[in-house]
Structures are given as structure tokens and as C-alpha cells.
Image (cartoon, rainbow, N blue to C red; front, side, top):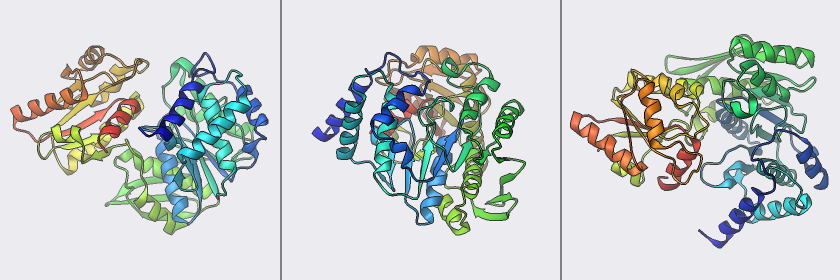
Length: 434
């Protein structure tokens, strides 16, 4: 690691100690800090604000790609990062530099003056400060957790977007789907258009009532706009007409839904350009979302001819989307599927594994390297077995890949291998295999 990299890492590590809770959903601390910084959140370009449980990162990636295909300069704020913190802050098309990251973190730390504040709050303030200092045409802003009290919810966007809502982060948002939807609905602002992705009836009702109460023009997936695959193309339709588009570059049927949501958001925000939409779908990049790995020491351990895929989805809703993506791959090119999985203790592992029953040949479970909150491989093995899957634990990613290779060789198979269960695990894999 370079000395420059060590400098930002040291500051970020120090910022983790400024508040006793890693997550604490209120807005007063970030509002105080932004005031001390001169309110950089008031000097931002038009904002697309994206909340939701699943697909919000991919929706942000599609929105960025489409806007940039129009020749626009786009800021982007997403979380968490996979390999380095710098991934969270994209300034007019480029990741923030180490020098500027150190400068803004130092400035925010000094302005905060040791007052209690969470890591996400102070780093979000740093992102706002950086965005305010670079000209851009749009800011794609991803909610960190929830919506109403999320640190990003401190400005009035041009358009609010709510991706599919499911059960996740229940320790902070509760176990009620209606309650979680109410938290996500907190990003809806008076008179601001809100674009809503596919939802359960329960969540949709909550969002519709909130939009109506705030006179926020609402557009709902499946009612006001539509998207589907047809004969190797993507068809998008809304009140303005029909678009015949290329399939998204990102793999899986769920990415058609995410692309549809992004297109609707772009059009609601007044950035409509059909040629740019086509280019954006072809150019979009979003690591660790059904990403095919082609190099690295872990890939080298796989059987010859094997496919190795990576996805960071970590809740039951994401597992259904991943399973559908695997089923689509199976239709095009049949191969036996094996999983290598690691998950955090806070996740519902049994429900995550359930959608893979009947689709996956075998699961090898691992603890996420250097992650205190990781489920042990043995506990994850128990969850996979309880979900009806054949499974074995392994002591490391390398051993897990060697186990899969041994199973495949014994059966005379060329497998499709998916590494899944956690963005933390995905980050470790990408750090060593990209």
C-alpha cells in the first residue's frame, strides 16, 4: 500500500470512533456539520435520489451511464465500497483522487471538532463538500439505509426513485414491510416527481399514500411505465411512447427491471434522449452484480472451462433475482451450478439459500476473510442444509474453490460457479482477482 493510500485509510479508521454506534438514524448531526461547512448541500447540481432494498445501486449505475452518454458531467455517491473507499465518490466521471479525499476528510474532521457523528454521516458530508466544488450537470445519490433519516436526505432532489423494497436491515428498520416502506418513502418531497419500481402491494400502498399526501407526481412500474425482454431486445414503454432498446449489459432478468426504473427516472427528470439510453444500456458497469470473473488466482483454481461469477446480493429478495439470472444462463448454456457463499451474521441465511433449491448442485460455505461480523462457515453450512441444499464448509476461499473443482472433476462436469452472499465477500474477491 502506498503512503498516500495509508493516509486516507488512517483518517477513515479514526472517523469510525467518533460515535458509539455504527448506524444511528437521525439527521441533526449531519445538519450541524453541513452548517459548519457552509452548507455544501445547497450548491449541488440536480439530484436523482435513489432509495430501496434491492437494485438501487444498479439503478444508479444505469442512470449514470445514460446521463454520461448524453455528454453530461455526472457526480455519483454510492455505498458501500467493494475494494477502496474512493469508489463511493465519483466526481464528474472520475473517482475522487487520494489527495482530494484526504483534504475533504481532514476538513470535515476539523469542522466536526470531535462531536459525535457516525462514519456514514461524516463521509456523506465529505462527499457533499467535494460535489459542491466541481461543476456537474447531475448528481446520482444513493441512500445508504432507509430513507427518512438517512444522511443523504438533506436536500430537495429533481426526482426521487424507490427501487424494490424487501426485508433487510431489520435491526434498524424493523420487521414490517409497511414500516420499511414508510422509511423509504421519507425521500419523497412535496411536488417532486417520484418513480417507483416493482413493489409488493403492501409497500406500494404506503408509497402511493405518501406521494399523494405530498402532491408528489408518482409513476409506478407496471402502471405508468413498463419494461420487458422480447426477441433479444428490451422494450420500454410509458405515456410518451415505446422504445426498442438493446438488452442491458448487466446480466439477469432483474437488470431489465432496474434499467426500466432508471429510464423512467431519467425521463421524469427531463433528461430524455433515446440514443443516450441505448448507449447507456450497452456501456453500463456495476461490479459484483452477476459479474463474470476471467482472471486471478481464484479463477485459476477453478476447473478448466468453468465459468466463475460474482454477486454481492445478500438478502432473500436478491437471492430470488440471482436464482432467476442463473436459470436464464442455464436456458442459454446448461452447466451444473455450484455456490461458494459467505454471509454476515445479521443476514437470514436460510431464506437466502431457499431460492437455489433444485437449481444448485452443491454449496461450499466460507467465513468472510477479516470480517468480524461474518457467519462461521459451519453455521452457514447448517443454514444451507436447512434450506434443502447439499453443502460443505471450507476454511478459505481457495479451499472452497478446490472443493468445487474436486466435486466437478469427480462428476466429469464443467461447472458454473457463483461466489455470493455478501458485498464484503465480493470486495475481497475483487481485490485479489481483478
